[in-house]
Length: 108
Image (cartoon, rainbow, N blue to C red; front, side, top):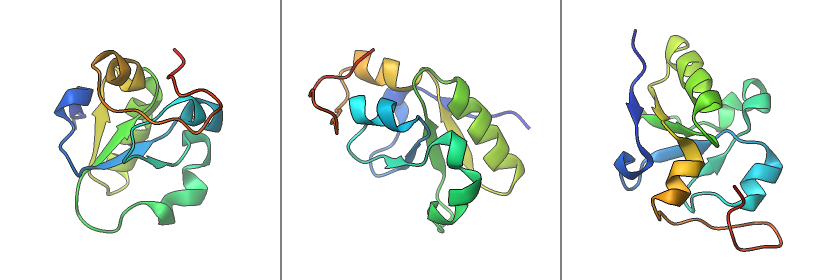
């Protein structure tokens, strides 16, 4: 099974976007509509994933962790799509970002 990849600008509006980065990365800047579930705690938080049959768009900083998480989710019965290039490309594309940290700017 080949994993589907999309660029950040191809993520549909209203999609279930799951950010799998660690807390400090999330705090530095994330997509306003993203749900934060770090890859390191995914197993304990599977119950937090949306329960409908909509695809999950998985994003990290550069695309590596999200690729692994999306692959695992697909093998385990979810429909997951990797956001290639991650938040680095999201930011470079000028897509909206909000910050939970002290600064309002995304830190590359």
